[in-house]
Length: 68
Image 1: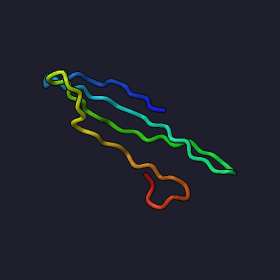
Image 2: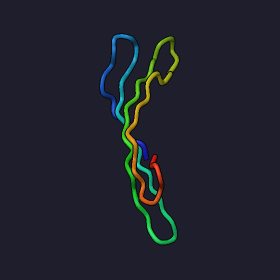
Image 3: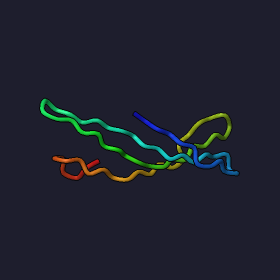
Image 4: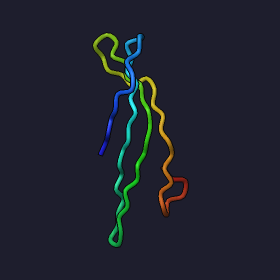
């Protein structure tokens, strides 16, 4: 699941958003939901949508070295 929330419209034809992605990881014995949060900027210049900035926090996933 993805939740996208507009934060601001900028003078340079870009829009800043915050997002949360919910990841459900499971196996035969259990399941767990992880939230990955981030921000992105989308350009709407010349009738084209383009992601010009994407930043996200890491997520520590139980049993996975390094996380996501």
